[in-house]
Length: 191
Image 1 (cartoon, rainbow, N blue to C red):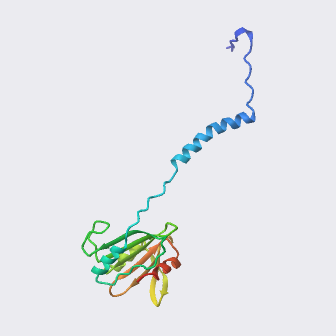
Image 2: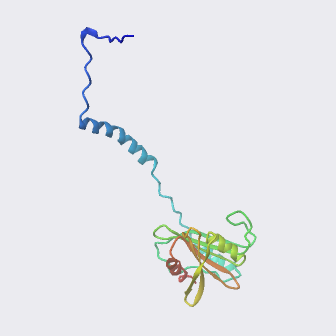
Image 3: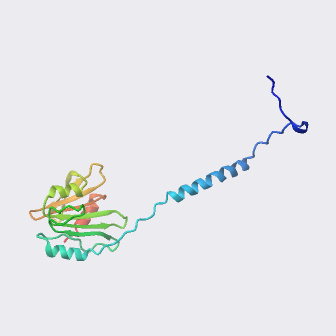
């Protein structure tokens, strides 16, 4: 079998010259720039809109209706944003649409670093409240603040910490993805 090459005008096709370095750089840039722009466009994460809530009226209502002294912060820095304020009397629908097992008071704030710190207080099922607020935390020592003993809890992934104070009237849980010192500082603002 023979291979035949068709050549027009008896000239052999010339080989194409190798591209120069600047030509290769331009070709690679022409390919990469659109890919990078597409990646940047679709990987943008918009800042979530933070809706502040007026928590003072909720505290006033809870203090008027609760069968226990409601703990609420005083003199928080203005840079803290209240994002949750809720008073749920026993038997009324809570966040999960289930009847509240006890009179439940909840506050939540975002710190200037956008870290959530929560305050939960209830007069029934203290273990359930602790379990929920601390993300199934385990005991991790104690803190004594102004002569009051607070139990420390930490979640299994060591991310969420909680301080818990219980008495015969209610249980207070302060929780957040913060060191204990930050939770303790928040606890000292409670009145």
